[in-house]
Amino acid sequence: MASLLRSVGTIGTLTLGSRVLGLVRDNLFARYMGASFASDAFLIAFKLPNMFRALFAEGAFSSAFIPMFNQKVADKDGPGLKAGIEFAERALAVLLPVLLVMTAVLQVFAWPITLVLSGGFNGVGEEDFAFAVMLSRLTIPYLMLISLVSLFGGILNSLGKFWVNAAAPMLLNLTLITALLLFDNSDPMITARNQAIAVSVAGLLQLLWLAWAAHANGVSLKLRRPRLSPDVKRLLKLTLPAALGAGAVQINLVISTALAAAILAHGSVTYIYMADRLNQLPLGLIGIALGTVLLPTISHQLGSGDKEAANATQNRGLELALLLTLPAAVALAICGKPIVAGLFGYGRFDAADVQATTEALAAFSLGLPAYILVKVLTPAFYARQDTRTPLNFGLVAVGVNLALNLALIVPLAHVGPPLATAIASTVNVALLYRTLRKRGDLVPDARLKRRAWRLVLAALAMGAVLWFTRELTESYVAGRWHDRALALAALVGAGALVYGTATLVLGAFTRADIRTFFRRGSVEPAQE
Image (cartoon, rainbow, N blue to C red):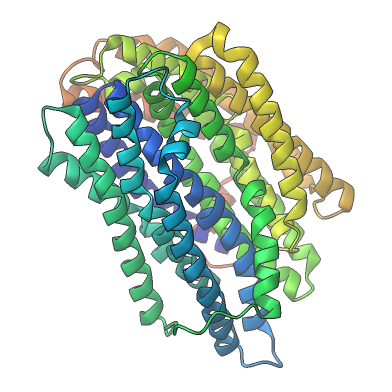
């Protein structure tokens, strides 16, 4: 368990740094842009790169590439790392021209793509819509750049250099923050344009960072003539279904955003985005970190024929997910208003915007455990090179999300899409878990069963305390920045103290678990 905890802790710490920078970015964005057509237009333009990153870069390609790369490196009868590098070069030879063509096609069809993603922005004029299309064209190059980043990131993750890839998102946030601080303009439209340019600049910086890190670790990829070798064909065959399967949550968010832009008042896209950004904080710290570590770990264990170790790793992954996710979901649901007000309630982002964002956040938080459990369960499929099953379940979730969006968006306005996304993700998790159990690929052990219900009780105890203490912070989160910081720190500290104490008292987390975090060991469950 110690090695799993340490790897997750390393990635989680770096992701925390990136998410903190992300909150700074969003704070500045809200202050300078508010909730307006300009902010909605940029967020729609940013949605396509974000979706593609999740579908392809962070999900599909890595999920297909890492097990195949590990298999070649682990082949004792083969040349090891050299074979893995040759496979990566063959993949790059096919990937690069495809990405170049795709980028050109997206630039040509930016107008209809923006129309689909925004639904026409609820009937804006031609000039405003042309502005939104221009923002999309500025962000489209990021898709190609982040896909190449995923190739180098997959190699480094397979080599155990998790921290390098985990640090890359910081460059995106730093670039956007720099653009806001150095190139802010009183006209939100110009600020939105500068942010769109910064997105693609950040993609280039991320690619240079990963390519340099790979070179420093003995991996330098040479350009080859494109050829569909058998292993590249298999990579492509695995990547396509994984793109939809791993990205069901992102597809659901895109559907929700498009419907909000098409039907609801201007600013609704920004409310949903800001709420999702807060919801993404624990998702990034926990879900992405666990998913990043679990895939290569389970792949190695299955490759060596140790199914028992793979099941133990999966159980500990579920345990860690519940340990960290349940309190986050409860805290966001109960303390949403002081959190939103303290972080975003500046400048053009007024009290009405804070209230609307709080309502959307409460809906998103209901699905937070599901969002993270998807990241924990899907590696069990991908490690066995089964990308089809998550795809099928992802499509079911997309269908559920679309139906619920259409049913809820009119009566619940900006709360409807987040609630639909939360329910759809829960359906996805239920299908994934049931299938793994049925196949015998996941057998919950006694420790997981014993601790799960205790974690729920500990989270509820924390929620009860926060319910009565949140009102004490309301006057402070609307004050000066240091008053806001102290109020939010007090909320977080109180919640952490109560939850930590409750987990120890109830036996959901033990002192032995704390010690294992600081010493080396295996992923086998600790004895209790």
